[in-house]
Length: 117
Image 1 (tube, rainbow, N blue to C red):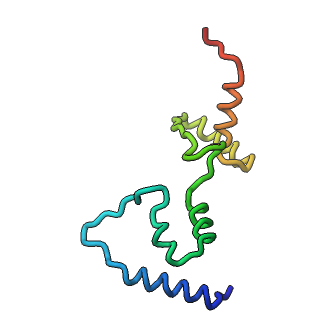
Image 2: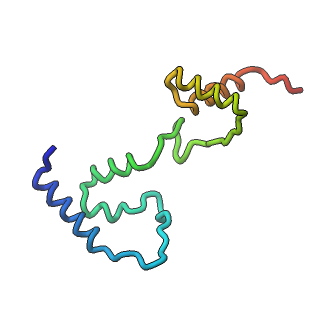
Image 3: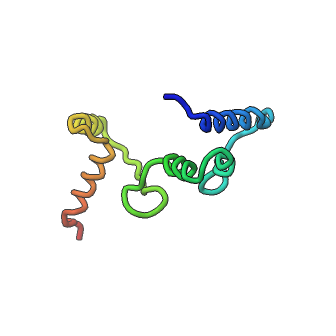
C-alpha cells in the first residue's frame, strides 16, 4: 500500500510534532486524560474532522450490549474448577465467548419463575 503525497506530508507533520514534544520529567506518571476524548485536540491538528470522528469512534472500546451510553454493567463471578472447565469447553465447542454463554445462562435462569416465597 503506498501513501499519497498528502498522507505522507500529514504523517511527516505528526512525526515532527511528536519528536518536538517535551519529554516527561524524571519520575512523571501518565494518567488518564480529562474529558471523554483525551488527545482529540492534538490529533485534530493532523486529521480531517471525518478522520478524527472515525478514530474517536473506534478507540472507545467495546460497544455496549444494549442501547445507551457508557459501559455495559459487568459482574465478577467466582466459579468452581469443574464449572469453569465446563464453561471453557462449551464456549470452545460452540465457538462463542464465555461471557455470551454466561449472559444466556443468567437470562434463562431469570426467565423462570422464582421459587422464593
